[in-house]
Amino acid sequence: MTSDDPVFVARALVLHDLESTGVADAETVSALEAAVADRGWWLEQWAEGKDFVVGLVAQDVQDALLDAKGRWPLCRACDLTDPHSLHVHPDLGGPDPTWVCERSGVSVAPVGQLSS
Image (cartoon, one colour):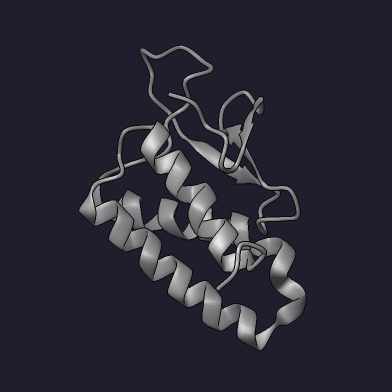
């Protein structure tokens, strides 16, 4: 893998978001590694999908964490008394995937640029 490998880039960006939101423990990093492996295989089958890998890895991790730990990432742009999630827009993950508030529709940050 090289730094221009879409799967490597996706791993780095989603890991940043996991770390910046304080959930990058062994279980979540394992979920990330599983998503990266799955999307690596997927990309081998459909090379034209490279622009979608970042968003799809983010969605895969989000889905895995929902089952294991609950919603992630939580929106910090809105009222914190009613926790709700961000989702990846566009729905198919790319190109240029962004975390968007599920309630207000406000774009919070590109995938890989969430802040603490």
